[in-house]
Each structure stands twice: as structure tokens, then as C-alpha cells.
Length: 369
Image 1 (cartoon, rainbow, N blue to C red):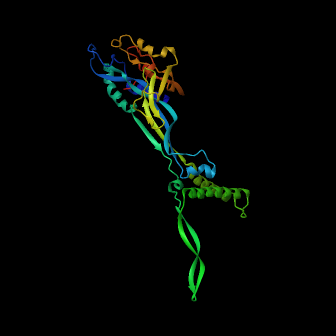
Image 2: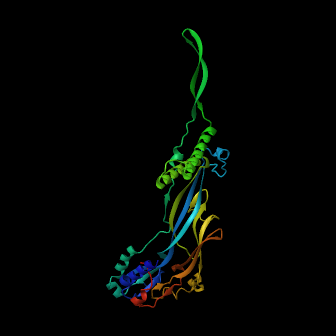
């Protein structure tokens, strides 16, 4: 914010305020304003916030063998049904200076300002002034894919079974019974398939133990041993997920702008754990709000009552200095985050510079043209 302020002030000092104005009028003008000659408009700055909101979308996926998790593995903390829900993550505020459309002024240029092309220089300065729309919102999503093992897992639904029986044959004219085998396919039950997955987990754990305890005869290098243990652990986790299920997290980053007003309370977003973030209908109990409070008693909104003498009679530039405000975020009247203090322009008292102020006097004020 300091860099931005320096940029604006330097712009004002070097390009815009070349000579003193004749008169300054508050916009909109009334019918009695005796405006003459060439004019130029400017606005006072107001302080908004760029809000960066992180939301986590959680996808719980039930495992194929969740119903057998307790009986086969003794697991009770497993995902029992597919569901999706959302969690609010980190929230960050970045102050930005914006033009205050409610504090716009018309400058009646002096002959010297006209000669020095004051209006043209002010118009060119617009390209360097950030004009951000507080309704502008965007978001990015970072998704966690379903692991290939889980997504593509399929177990044969049948097994081959051999039946032994006695077969009658005629050998050399003699009726003889000889033993015979016949292979047939038998459908597997879900319990049988779950048992095979549980056996794979048990085998992986046993192999890991054997490697760590050194029961193998081959003297593996530390690197090879680490790689094999990692592979066996991954296989264990793969098969374990068939029982416990998966909990995948997708991160959604929202970026939007808000401009607090004189109410000192500014709605940010609504949040529903089952639906996520919404920017519509920001009036319910599920709305997160910015709450502001002045750090100095003289900087409160009541200073508005002491703005100027007669705004149409005063000839000098109007200005206001930013004042410190404490900003926090509430939900249902309870504080959920404290952002600290920010210097905010809209809560400062509007004052009037003396007519015919010099360039040096104007360097301190960040007017926006």
C-alpha cells in the first residue's frame, strides 16, 4: 500500500498539480454553481480490500469392502457413505486504493493550468490509476485425483475349483473305475474378495517386518531397502483404502473485492458446509462479515458532520487523510478472525486546502483523476 501511495503522490507532484485552481465544486453540481471555462474532475481515494479466500472441498468415497472392515481388520473408523462437504480455510486481506465515486469534485482551471495542459495530463494519468470493480470475482481450483489403484481396482468375481470323482472306463475289455478331476468356475462372494484383500495387507506387513528385522539372506543396500519398504507400504495403503475408503481434498481459491462503507459492517460471503461459498443473498446467519471500529475517537464517521464550510463556496481542493481502523471478521456476531489495523481513507474527515495552494502542499494527497 505504501508503494501505491508513493506512486500516486509522485504522479500528483510531477504531472498534475502544476498551478493553483480557481474554484472546486462538489459533484453533482446544483443549478447555482457559476462554473466557467475549462474544468477537470477528480475523486478522493477510498480504501477497499482484495479478499483471498481458501475453501477446501472434501470428497469422502466409501471403500469397496467397508462393510467387512471391522470383522476382517478390526477397523471402525471408516467412511460409511459417499459424501461431499466444504471447509473454510485461510482468509487474507490486501488493502487497495480505489476512487470514491461519492466524493467527486469539479476543478475550475486557472489560466496557467489551461496553458500547462492540466486537463490532458490528468486524463493521461487515468491509465496508471487502478479502477477495480468490487463485484469482480474469480476462483481457481486445485483437484486431487482418485488414485489409479482405487479407481481401476477390480477383483475376479470367480475362482477355479477342481472336483475329484471316479470315472468308469473300459480298458482292454475290462470295465475299470479310474480317478479323474474336473475344473469348474465358482462365483466369489464379496466376503471372499474382501478376505483376499485383507490377506494382501497382512502379507505386505509381514514382508515389511522381514525386511526391517533382517530375516532375508540378501544384504540389500540402504537405498534398495528403503525403496522396497516404500513400495510395500504403498501396497498396504492401496489395499487398506479398499476398506477405509478415500478422503480427497480439492482447494478452491476465491479472489474478490469489497469496499466497506459508513455502516462499519461489510458482508463478505455466505457459507454452507454442504454447498460451499455463495455471494448471493448475504443476509442470513451463515454470512461472514467484516466489522470495523475506529482506533481514534476523532476518526469516526461523525466527522462527516464537520466536513466543510459551504461545499459550494469553498475554493480549495477537498482532501482527507486515511485514519486507522481495526478490522475483524465475525460470524453470527462472534469473532472468527482478527486482521489487525489498516489505514482507511473513507473514514477520515474531509477538509479543504487553502485556495491557491502551492504544488508542495498538494504532494501529500493521493487524488485520483
